[in-house]
Length: 210
Ligand SMILES: Cc1cc2nc3c(=O)[nH]c(=O)nc-3n(C[C@H](O)[C@H](O)[C@H](O)COP(=O)(O)O)c2cc1C
Image (cartoon, rainbow, N blue to C red; front, top):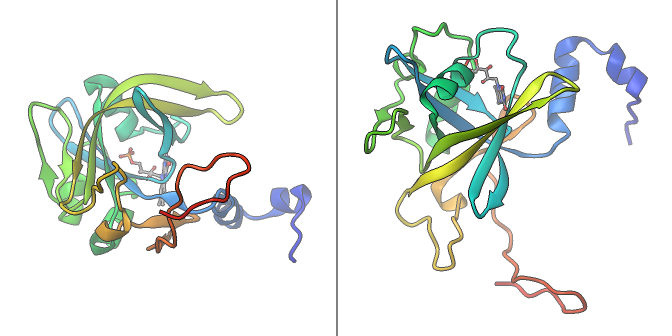
């Protein structure tokens, strides 16, 4: 096996280190976060740090890089209180990746990529129409992470929109059917295959497949 020590990690050039360390947390979720600026510019950003925080209430978190440079997603959602999380799928990988480019606040990634903004109700944040899993979140809390000046943003799920055929009888959302991608490192988009589902498992019982 290759062994990499902490000393090695510290000695690597920035990009090499970023590629290495971003691969360590495993396959990550692939999302576009949609927001609206106060003057009406629609914004999209690529985010791989979305995590489940709890089901009751339904909470999702994501990690924001240090706000040492303008962060459009952060500034917009703090003002409007709403943002969308849209799963990235096979048909728009390149467009989704391009939303990680550092565009100025007055430029819309929707316009630059050709992705389609979609509004529902009176929510002040655009969904990505092409996405098979579209979520509306309301901003609840930000948690500063002192060790590296990042911020965890916590939001409550206000509404869920799923492409037909993804929602199964027991509430499970079959992401594979929507060709939803995940991310390896910072730039590799993968399409996972669901191998098995298992029933709720208890101590001393053999695990059962669903
Ligand atoms: C695959 C990938 C995943 C990313 N994940 C995050 C993330 O979880 N948090 C973050 O702050 N930036 C992340 N970024 C960087 C943002 O996409 C980038 O800073 C973008 O410009 C943010 O857009 P905004 O300024 O419009 O908010 C990621 C970039 C890529 C390519």
